[in-house]
Image (tube, rainbow, N blue to C red; front, side):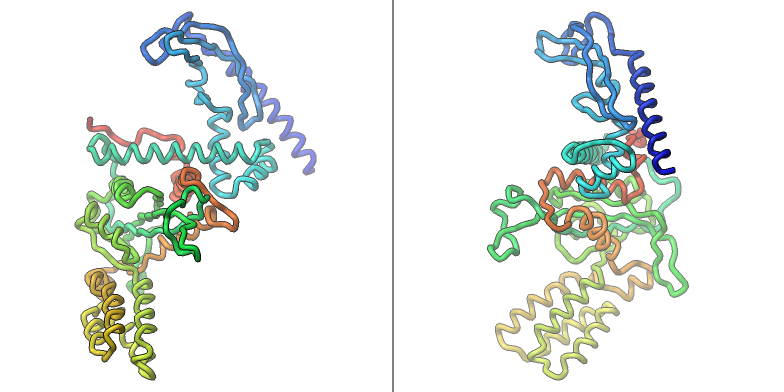
Length: 423
């Protein structure tokens, strides 16, 4: 039966490709003897020329009218533009398919999957180039739309239902790079050089309820993902535009979750000044454990009990008590300097560590959703053993993965007119 299935599929695909070729041949793109070249000149019809194109139905040959502009010295092929094939050898339908599999799996396995599941024979390099090109194009579109939103030339349509509470969880993670992308950059490697570049990830999600124990519950299917290798300032504009699309302008409450990195709070204060800022409780606990390890020699046998009491104070959001108790210890001058440096994290973020108050409000106090995103959306595809990326390639693939993780593949790929220009 399997052999029959494959034989019939092969025959039907070949028949479909032939039919597609005939349908497209009905219009070869001849638009008269002369046409506008696009630069204000007239291009002259020369002849009909063939082009091989790979489609979801296999390879086909297109016959298209070719024009040439003497002034520009360039050829013009109207039919290629109309079919989305200018400078491309893959149909739009096949490009979408390639992008989907390349976002999910490394390029070689993606090529094998296309061959096995769809009967399409594309080399690994063609899969790589097509996916990275389309991811880059999508990223460029996102950048352009974010700039238009900031300039009030584009107004995202708000969600149908008003947003009760919108969260923005923000984090960053390193992606392994080829040497040329990290040249001259300091890092944590033994030789002092960097091997990675940071990609910033934002996860936006909503919350409308708490469970029976009063713990917040993330709305199912409400998470959207946004990632960028750009500097924090540019990432902030992308995040702001996405937040507007998600209804931040009319949301009853905004909450920004982060690990304490200063760049996160700078973005929050710039783009979301009315948002509640919350340092991830688990990162704060890690810092407190590090503080306990620093003070272990001075605490001696009291170390475990002292740390337990400070963890309780942290969970209650009593940062003033934590700081005061730590500073009562008798330490050497060098130890005191190290202590003040460690306590600076808590002192700087004290207002963001009011965990008892945040729980009373029904807020999340952990940024687990974005940390999981760093692992699943980025790590599982871009940080596998032996992988080394260019910025462009990694940015393209991570953009496709964010699109997939956000459940917006069809919406974004087809690029509907879901915004209103005010210009």
